[in-house]
Image (tube, rainbow, N blue to C red; front, side):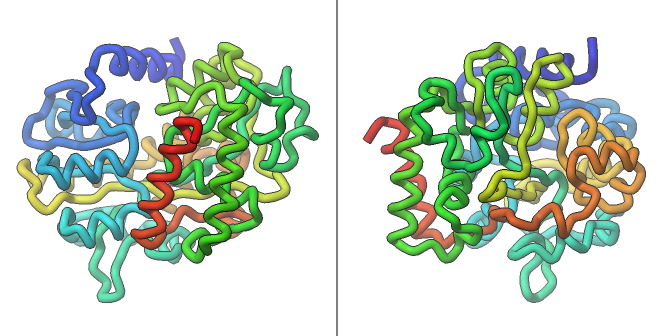
Length: 360
């Protein structure tokens, strides 16, 4: 069984075993450290140094999206670390949920990619205080069945609303990715300045897409199965969907060169203000995810880049180039970077997306 197959099976097993609760526990292992994460990142291949030092993995709990995680933590759920993406960090910090990171205890901090660190509102505040360790980064992009879809028919992101793809489309059940798609489709690459007119145009585009949607996928396992099993032929998905489908032998490809571009995001780890567990083990974990072998696993098996430039330099250059990470500046060209948006706009997006999914 390949590593990617093991990942798919393991993730599916977890999904079937846990309840719908955002705080379902994958494995009550090291109780001195709780990590609130996306399903799949509990794989020990992401933190081998932690296991080597402490004898077991941390205890992982899962959320479906960052807004769900935010509400859970704000309601009193206790965790030591969490794995949001950069567009959410300002909101979490301003809500008083986070504590600063002690960068002197993070061995790879000075090796973080300068091109990533200069991205808007990413890791530090103006006073130099660090709140976020950038770690995994990649795209949400067009992903398709190459045996059923002609690339010429999906040169524009407007293809998601083309009636020819009725019941053949999937996009994530994720407001950020949905509005990234809609923003790009209407020609907007900086959503932080979205006007009311543009918001209405983007929302109307998503209503047209909804007419074609067969499923709103919630995690990688679901979209990989939908694409590989032929349930859908065209998806707006993360890099790992194409990588994992292809490794499993399915004719699934990603398309980077659409007319309107793609969406780029950077995710990573934060420490929670009222973290109940061990501070030492929290930094053990943050250091373990910086290892070169973790970067190789992240790029090869998941199709994501690693924010640590030194670790990325250890990965086979051909693999790095094939995944599109050879040049950070080129990578973020013609892209919508998922930076923070004003709180009022974000609430409008959340409310409108729920209505769109309900058919209104």
